[in-house]
Length: 167
Image (tube, rainbow, N blue to C red; front, side, top):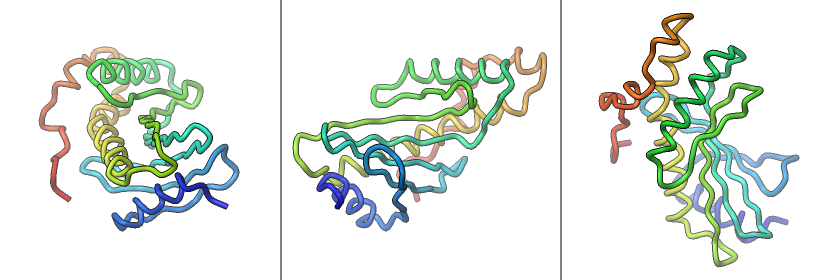
């Protein structure tokens, strides 16, 4: 039987017309979804922790690496991006070389406000989409070219910013 919090999350997805599917075998109640953004396809999961009334949205990059130098540059990219974030943050599964954006909200009621849930989803998609071109640039670089990239400069590229309010 699904919790009221999980049902309110799935209802928010349904209200927006977003395709989603439950994920079995995880702690808490989890659903998975995917969205086409400006720069990348954003795959995410939403996990409900009913006992503490928390909803966590996690978007994942598709670009994995076992290259230690690249993994370090991606970690720098995540850290420098996090310096400017107010809500949510990037993290890495270091051993897999996987970059994720995580955003969690605690709800006072048994049910989640649909506007907050959809805002969380939009934020996760936008942040992963915003970082995607820089992440792809790092992945394309090799050897000394990777070391020569100034991550701060990558983050200043306004031409890579996702278009807000369209689509």
